View 1 (cartoon, rainbow, N blue to C red):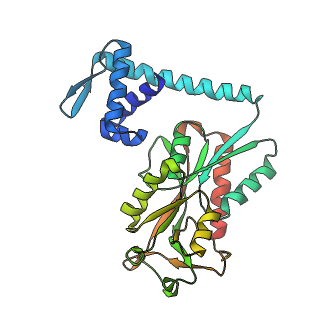
View 2: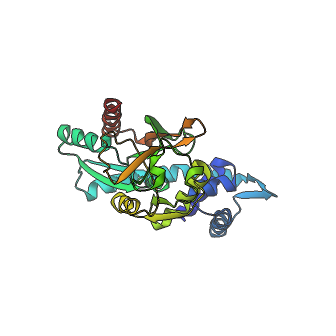
View 3: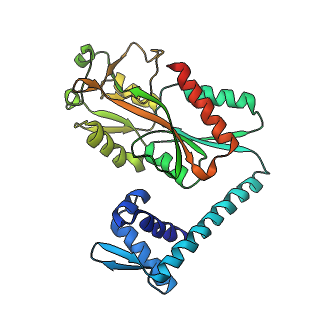
Length: 296
């Protein structure tokens, strides 16, 4: 029932079944079925449906307000129980972007460990949607992520840097001789993406519909394997981050990615829930921001 309540809250919060379904990463029909199942279990309707619109019943208004308190209490209980299970151990849970090639996060973690050696850092990696899920479900205190949607007041959103986009391609490819490259130039070259199997469709849609790559997509689990595929001529790799050290090897060529006359850019941000602004979270975010400023 807890998951169904969260779906119900998402529909009310967004005032839309379709937007709630997108937020919850399920289909619109599935979220509608889950709310109908919740209504059956409760024994009364929560929503009055009118064509594509709806309004809350009086019982639905009451249930929505009380369910917000219920969910807040549940999340607090989970946090308290987590601390008890870990013997009141101080823990900072960080999510970071799979495939990011910069060193800023590593340096910030090192700096934090020096200052707070008794705080345990748990690290998870994922693509954009996986990290957003970890943050939304409170499995991460802070995530380092790319920006793909408008900022929400539910989260603290700190832009760490805006980075120019590049691709890596085999140095033996004729395309490696270009000074810059566009998505159109790569239409006949497979795009290699680093993604879990569950998120492949999401990553494909983003790089096809937003970035503009129109060729074949192939997937790998990690950066090392992706670069080996590039070296062997299996495709090109969009680069996450800005590794200025140039240590991407002589077998790889790195080309700036342009759309028209402008190089494509991407924002990288630190996100955390606005109601989870603990001391460690904010201080780590400041350390991470400082590392990006030093790299500029």
